Image (cartoon, rainbow over all chains, first blue to last red; front, side, top):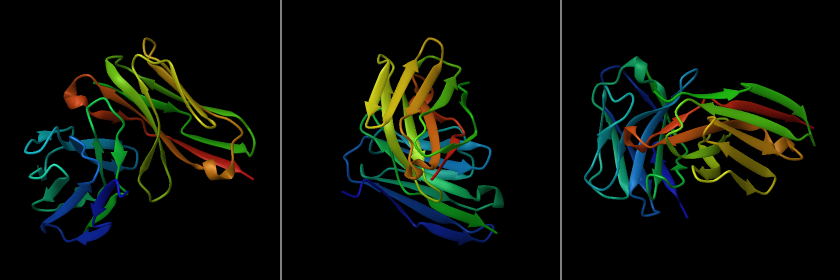
Length: 112
Length: 113
């Protein structure tokens, strides 16, 4: 039972480069979320989705885009990476908005 | 804006001790409160979920309580073990703002053998 899987686990980008982080869940969850975790700032919501084909902005959406073309996948894109986007990114999913959230193992991204 | 505070930020205890971690939140309009564990360099593992209508939840040596009206939750760990060493995060799921989880910054727990 894989749960929530994030790809890749580590990445180093140069300023201005682009990349896509992939989140896949095999629990048939409707809701999916992208968070970033920074020292002293805790976890902050970037974008989220309440079902296939839907996306919405969270607390810190600037510089990121997302897509949810398939129910099981939620992609987070950085079009032009900046050093301020150096962080650990976590994907999470839940069956419904009030049910238990499950997290992936994280992607450690460094932008130089 | 919802704010979640966890006290203490760090805690060091000898093995076998019972301990309490505290979490407070400013907006009581929540669906639930969830406690997570995070090991260094790892993801978050869900420990306990308390719905807003519940007062407490138990799992093994863990017991979490919720007082929604006062904006407080506690996580009680009985007979602590070195393997309990980790950062413990609480998060509240709000009725508004897209049902997002708002996290505290965590309590870093060290259990010494």
